[in-house]
Length: 88
Image (tube, rainbow, N blue to C red; front, top):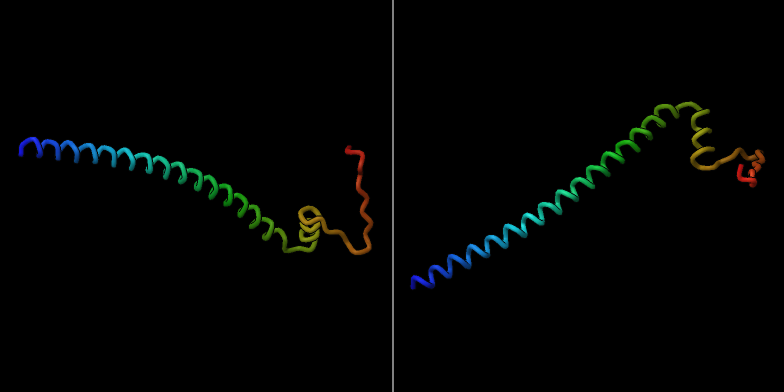
């Protein structure tokens, strides 16, 4: 009976050690994911701030036209666009 009790205690201890090691690996993985997500949040916040500035500045017609030309590649209906193919 004494040997059985020791075997049970050793088995339980080994089981707990394996469980703790597994949990530590999960924690490290979760911390890495958290850091990546926090970096994505910071990057998206910068994008959002830029968009908010564009919206705040975009109340006038000139800003809207500039954004349409630069970001969307729009041109006026009667405007002719020439593209420099020389690469300069």
